[in-house]
Image 1 (tube, rainbow, N blue to C red):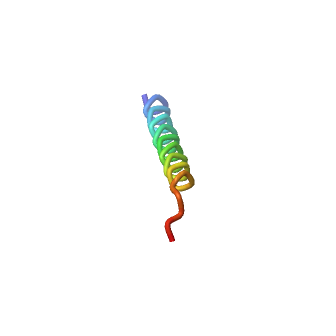
Image 2 (tube, rainbow, N blue to C red):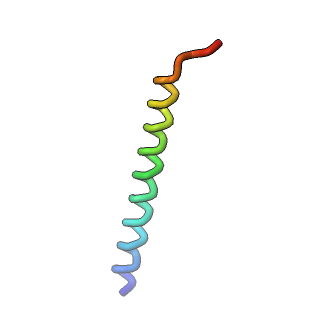
Length: 38
């Protein structure tokens, strides 16, 4: 029971990190694609 619970937590944490990584990439791409207005 405990092992399964820990596995589930690890899966959730990994998926959260993956989503954050994808968001970061998207932000970087948007930032790069924007023309510099200065």
